[in-house]
Image (tube, rainbow, N blue to C red):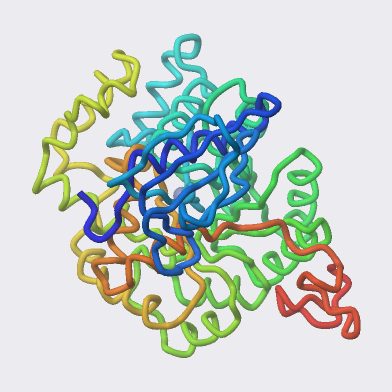
Length: 426
Ligand SMILES: [Zn+2]
């Protein structure tokens, strides 16, 4: 299992209740009593704790001796278990399910449009994420209408799943591996600004960029997004690209621990760490999933996992796992493995704000365990488990709205959060 990260089943009970808050029965109350409670902020564990839930919201938590429980309410005994908040995956792909070959996966879906429309796939993924203890996720790259439908159906309690921040299609300078309707090509700064405006007006919660844009394109996108209090996530690998995105005010730097390159310069890491800008390394899906699967191929035929898929889909997945040494997704694995430790260590030691993102759904990287694997990589690289659990509770929030208690500094007419002084972007 996951070294140093204890994920009690009872924790999931709490999470499921919180996630279905929209459908609360009036006056419903429940208490979980007896287990160890982790608060998700990195504080010391509370032993023999109690959690009081009213109308599917946690209203009190602490030592059982201090929490007053209303008389006669149902109590679940959590003795011997761990209770912790729902986890947040800041990088998920609900259109993918861990199939070995992304291109072949989309062709297979195209061949089964009525049996497996994309919305059904996304809802299947959402259910798997919730079952893994994830109560909030950023879904970064999917067709817009389906993304909105899945997000809203979860919010209304029609289907189970984590609360989603959706990006819809990502903005990208040239087509990448995903189908056309998953991406919007932008070639100039005005085009980039327009695409950002359209995405936001269309109903996205965050903007996802695929990287490789020019500094003026990044700046144009960030300006529009921040005007709407929307955060910008960017898929980044090369140092220069990271620097450009960072300088333009991109809010969440995704994949910067994915080991596609050697570690970054100390100056860049320091600047990012000092800025307080969020990084999401997405470490495990490139470097650690493949060797873990080689060492323990049984994970690809795990009955609990298999049961989470319709049988026709599972048959196709199994076919794609037939020879994992030939999966093109891992073509550069040797190089990534060589960069792996340095890629994580640079961030663990930097003091940067780290969010946990799994890139779940990518080859061999199932929603059912992707974020656990991501967390394990950090524990294995010396990050204390309590800190890792705290990082599992770092999410992207809407860009702060003007106000004295948020990120906006009225005296400077600037935003403390994105460090953009004197701009009209707030
Ligand atoms: Zn991704």
